Image (tube, rainbow, N blue to C red; front, side, top):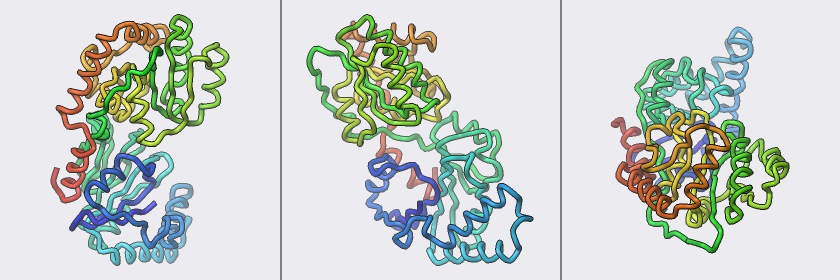
Amino acid sequence: MHYLSPFNDVHVLLLGEWPLAPESSFVEALEQLNVTIHRLAGQRVDDNESAEQIAHIFRQAKSGGFRSISQSGLRDAFEDLHDTLEQLDLDVLVHMLHRPNREVHDHYLSDLARLAGVDRVVLEVPLVADDTIGLHTPDVFIVPSEFAKGRVLEGRGGGGVEIVYPGADDSLAGLERDEGGGEVLIASVMRLDPDKSPWLLARTIANVCARKSDVVFEIAGDGLLRSMFEELVAELGAQQCVRMLGPLSRGGVASLLRRADVFLNPSVYNQTWGIANLEAMLAGVPLVAFPAGGGAEYMANNTNCIVPTTATPADIARVVEELVDDAELRAGLGAGGREYVTSRGLVVSEMVAHYERVYRGGS
């Protein structure tokens, strides 16, 4: 998808598979900069002939090499893309590398952009896989954490690396807690995909619900394994204490955090950052999670979160039950999480300012 966006006096084209919901933090960031977003020529990239032609050539190149493409076809497609970029009169071209295993190297795009007079080429890398970097040659890579930066530096081409920490929604800092009724609410906001450890979550729920009749788990999100997760919860006899909320808007997430007593993220896989954790912390909800990947950069055990001793349902359940039974501990961890996020500026407004500095050539 293309977004053609004037950052005040900086003309930026965002290109690639941006995983943006209408209320995502990045779209919100653009709006906070008074950016007018409109799609290139009012169309999706799939409807743009020259862009689709380039995409087709790149796909062929990945599968059969450039020898499988006629020189005239390659030249014509590159000339079309060059002319399109030149007509846009861009200052910055930002390419989102969202699914590295399925996308082509962008060094051709970077070189064409420079030939077309684009001042700065930025590659946004929200997810880091072993083959992410390859031959990419932007002026700067943008990554979300020190963990991601290290992975990029292992195999990068040209260009520097700039960390822009993803920010939590600023408004959560002033979120007023809804203490609710007699039940204790454990919230999770996650994709129900393998890398989020849904099996671990299901078995943890079963452990807790077997001993705590006043606990309810609310799970926000969707994913490939949702139906299998629900089946496992039922098999374990815990369906009576689970509410599946499905995908939520940002307002819906705020409402969930307002009511939550504990936020549980059971993923044991390396995540580049973990924005859901930070938003729970900013909302003052005590966090139970593992400091895998980028999470290790902001999680401090027993200060702004609790890290279970082992990644087992029994240990995670033990920590959850400890928090259920101790309102004072919950309040202390919630306050610690909120103070950490606010004091370090890990919020959307700070993220916005950092993006603009990078796009203008600073850091």
